[in-house]
Image 1 (tube, rainbow, N blue to C red):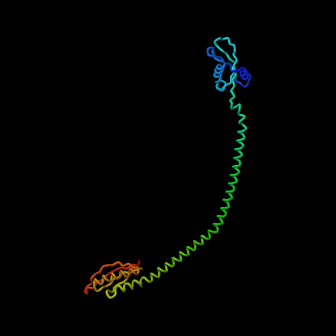
Image 2 (cartoon, one colour):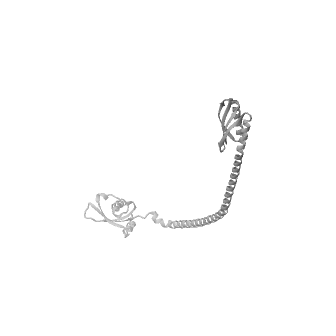
Image 3 (cartoon, rainbow, N blue to C red):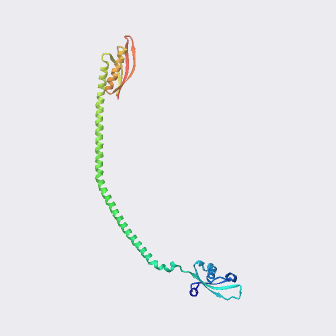
Amino acid sequence: MTRKKTLSVMDDESAFRQQVRMAAVQVAGLRPDELSAALAYEVEPFSGIPAAEAELAYTPVVDSDPAVRVFDVAVRRRKSRADKGGGRYLIPIIVVGITALVVAGVDFVRTYTHLNELKRNVAEQARLQAALDAVRNPAKAARAEARAVRERREAAARAQDDAAKARCAYADVLEAIANACGDRAVLSSLDGEAFTLRLTGVAVTTAAAADTLVALTDAAAKRGWRLSTGPITVRTPGQTAEFKCEITHD
């Protein structure tokens, strides 16, 4: 450590100062730089300056005890290259920061403008949609009403057709019964309720009774009626055959 550096630390009023006492055998044979390092470690707990970062100067002090060596020590934190050259990088950093702020400001203005434009477009679309709905809704209601009227008209037409078929149903089935019986059988009773008839007939023979039921089944089916046959019984005297059946409109 040169005298110039020692004087600069010693003359620095902000430097930490302490008197250090060390055993003579501990410092015997140490070179000046080694002694400086040893002293830096000695004052580190008190100065708070790590020995690796310490810039130190010392002055020997005469002591009456020959087994002890005494030193007045001044220590300060060594300035790093980054500290010495920090000013060179400060201006570029400031420029970069200002540029980033300008870019961020421009981006904010652009985004804010675009957002306002989007809001205006959405508001205009909402207005147009409301106007369109005002036109569509009455038209939709009119179509629904027209569809309902058409459905009611179709239902009425179907009802009329069903009524006409019902009016013709009994006439058709009675004609079918007359044709099926012919000269083979005669009706002895006919009763029932809406669209259901119960018949009792008499044929000259059991074969004639069976033929009559077959013919009646076929004729009734062609006119929309369904026949359910009942029993055929032989009547005495005369050996005539009685048959029963039920006819239901489909």
